[in-house]
Amino acid sequence: MTFWRFKSGSKSDTAAAAAPPVPLPGWLRRAVPDAQSLAAQGPGPNALEDIAITAGAAIGALDAVVRRQERWAGAWRQRLALAAAAVATRQTGRVEDEAGLRDAVLLTRPGDDVGPAGRMLLAWRWLATLPAEKLLTEASIAGVLEALGLARDDETTNDLTDELRQLAETEGAVGMLIGAFAAVERRGLPSTIGCWFADAMLAQRLGWKHAVPLLGGEAAGANGSIGGGARRPSLRREASRRSPSARRLCSPRRRGRALRAVDQSADIGRWVDRLIAVAPGLRARGADIVVDRLLADDAIVASAKIAGMSDRSLRRLFERLVELGAVRELSGRPTFRIYGL
Image 1 (tube, helix red, strand yellow):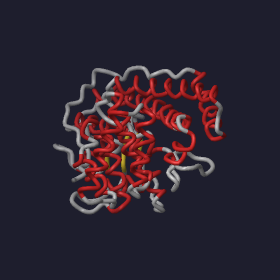
Image 2 (cartoon, rainbow, N blue to C red):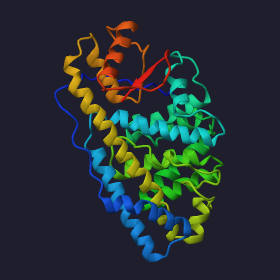
Image 3 (spheres, rainbow, N blue to C red):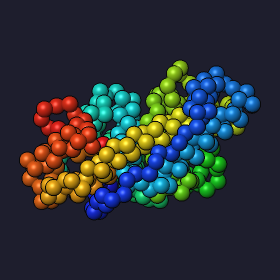
């Protein structure tokens, strides 16, 4: 399966501004460190109930952001995909950070190999781009495994696809996610691909049109645990040892990432408000296409091919948008610059 770079083909509607950000109650923010600390220590039944409540509230807030279907949702999901890919890349022992991953994909000529780090980013971008209903097909799973150098024979891929489908049909939400990690572990696959599958399954369970990279944005140790801090048993072993409590132990980790995703949506929304405000005054030919691309993707290289625009006119447009406070230059370099919200 080929992993394409994301492209936007819609016309920009510069009349509408972004909606106000989804508010997060103070009690939910205060509950984050407390619940995660309790989960690490092995909380009792009452504390686990509190964790479950805060986890549901956090996912509910994220769900509200997703269902708005904002024009900038593509850029938001791709920014989360970048963060997830950076975590996964570090776990493989590579040194590329988010900037390095951007460079690997954006500065590679079309058709050339983006390398292991670039393929990791493309895999997570694929999660955030492909409709959620298509993410867990046999073809999609085989393509992701192949892109990450984890290709298995057809029988193993088919068995994995069937097991994930059965989990989605028979398990509750958290049990389904734990089952996805267990399925990955049994086949000798790294926990990062379990994060990919779990994010896809969560999106399908909640009825989202596209997956939001969440679990991949948390550090996952070689033992398969999700989240930072001390080394913990794998989800599979924890589930067998403490079931059903182990199922709840996954919630605070997912919840913390959900809150950060909501916060990031608010930050992108503020940049979009500024971009939409200045867009009517942009006189460069093709400026509307550039605005669409900025709303749909994590970043654009200054040498991108935009219909009707020369390299020089595109660079001047980006420089003007930076002056107006509508976009950021993300590379910090004087050449080969990259721009985004």
